[in-house]
Image (cartoon, rainbow, N blue to C red; front, side):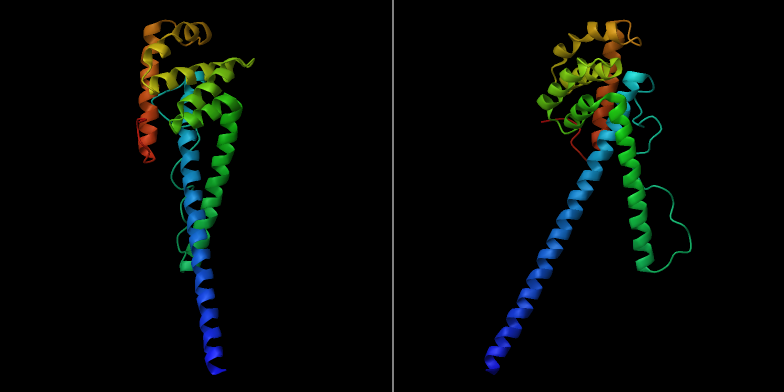
Length: 213
């Protein structure tokens, strides 16, 4: 009987260890997924700021989404906080504020650029060119002129990013017609190249491959 009790104790301990290991693995995986999601949200936000500048005017070489902050921590940690638990609580609060602000900014971008252009942009940042083109073409047919222009620029950038610049240039006449800021093809070329370089820089800033394989 004693040996049976010992075996049961060992089994219970092994089960407990296994449960802890599973929970730890799930927690680590969830944290990793959350981190990846936050990173992609920041990437799309920064790229969305660039496209917003293309549509509404602004410095295409800067990725700030019309005043929104996409990276880094939100606010400074108040001085005088001590203890690991307090620090952890403060960090969690900051992350919640940061996440809420990011979600707010992303919703703003979706309204400015339209759902289709925004979704296409998200695909472009991840080098999913065919998906991006599908969304871009749909957006370009929008009755909302801003959403349509965002779709047209997204189509130009996607072709340029996949090294099919001739196809991108075929869209320049449409840009000249629909974008009051573009008057000649040389201007469209320069703007396209600046935007493409900024897209690659944004990927690099978030440790993603700058160019698509």
